[in-house]
Length: 133
Image 1 (cartoon, rainbow, N blue to C red):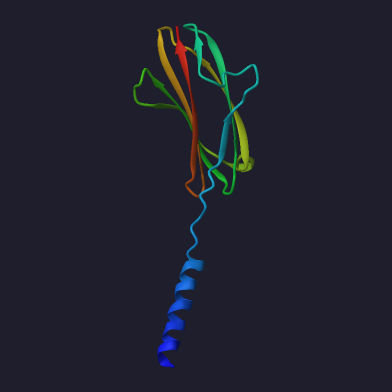
Image 2 (image 1 turned 135 degrees about the vertical axis):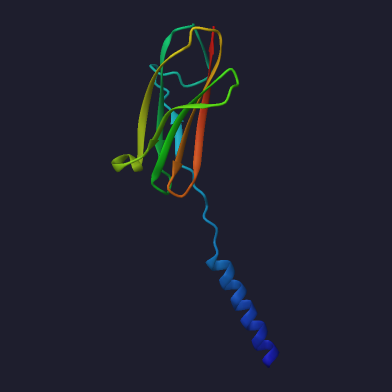
């Protein structure tokens, strides 16, 4: 009888441990390019010195949005942030950003990366390559 009681206690404790320690599903915030005709939204080729715009749309999935970063890498070099902001107020549920940019005056590849993080540490990013001719 005592042996059965111990087995039951172990089974109940194991079940509780499994139920109580559920892992967070890690729902990343959504991020996408604005695909309106006025915006570059896929890899593209642009002439040196040409002005262009990239639009980014962000929405939370589970937790409030926390930080937004936009960075640029030239010809495979390390990334350099040109926007780094903490999200406040009404934008914690979602927002859109418009980046007005100009291609440099030399040929090469410009990789633009846009990253969003939420309050739970979930991160999502998108990128596109502008080939300057």
